[in-house]
Length: 402
Length: 127
Image (cartoon, rainbow over all chains, first blue to last red; front, side, top):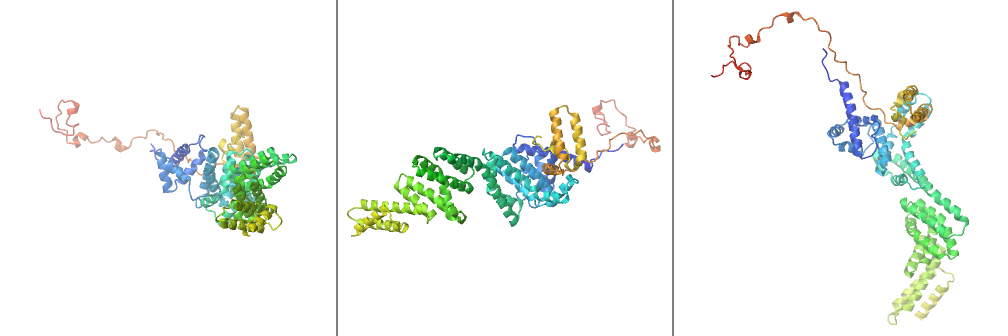
């Protein structure tokens, strides 16, 4: 009679079945209400078991504690891993990302795909194995060179499609793409690859934001033939909400200024100050951020005069004199050649000089007179042309000195 | 087609090639009476066999097979026909009682739990 033996093949089959059970335990620990991935994903566990750390994690999972395995599928450094493991990890985390809708899962999957993209030989071998016929060599080579970016496109494409409704995927994509350095670091990309990833993410964000801006742009286009009023301001409010929701991107700030300035002028000329004041209030945080960025980013200089004009509107609308003056100062700081900004600031400085003299006490007037003189001097340097209030202030200062 | 990758939905090996995929999907289609399921199978078949590029994209989105194969099953443990006894098996075996020097021991009529041989001793119990 042949004696029963535990063969190497039996051990392999046993491990294959055990890895499948480990995969199920790992998946259960992820806390996602969905069936586990295809049993082939258990190959990921087998690959992780190739290291002593992986073997320990598998043993712990067998004992009912998959936490070490869960940590192991979230490798911080993916650069030196086998492509087939990267392929498994990329799919595993993409499944999680889709089910859970978490930015971290997307970062992990994109890092795994980016790391896999550095193994074109693996992808080319996959192409040869899956499509030995029907595709030319160069078509397969092109596919292998770009295949790892498909997941990126799935995220960006999905985000674009959901942009008008401000979907969760769109919010996640904008957040993930705002800073791709963690992805580059995890995937072990070199400087050139990292820079390319950065450019790719910037282009992707532009696409997504364009898709989010499109319906608002269409509304503004539709309302262009009508007299500017509450309807226009309401649409611009949606734009500000989008700006806030999307993480305050400069692209939306530029779009706002491009579209809102003409509406602001129309409201101003038509003396619709209630609507203009509402626009001013709604847009205040957006314009403040934009103004601050113009001060430090030379490439935004082309927007300086337009943002300054919004500050001039604000200077004219503020109920308190100090705030009016502060807004006018800001207009000139944003764009020191802005004609309206200089005019309004000169006017307000003249007003302050007159008030200073008016409120000056009989004793100790000198300090007040000095402050008034300084304001008038500055106002004149800002506005050398004729300006009634400035002329009046100049005369008052001269009289005081006499 | 559902969101599930057809390679995984129908447990197909991406490297099996269009012929094997067609055979497996045909088998599945024949096994079902559900028309909608049959339509899904047809859709999967088209995606996996008509467009090589689509086949590649779907293979990329399916977990690769990296597990060790299940291997060859063990041969069944079947007891063969009884073999004829060898010559040495016909020889009378020596008496274990003699080998243990117990041939002359007078066995008392005792219950089994007090039997000296079973108790490991030839000593007769004390009266």
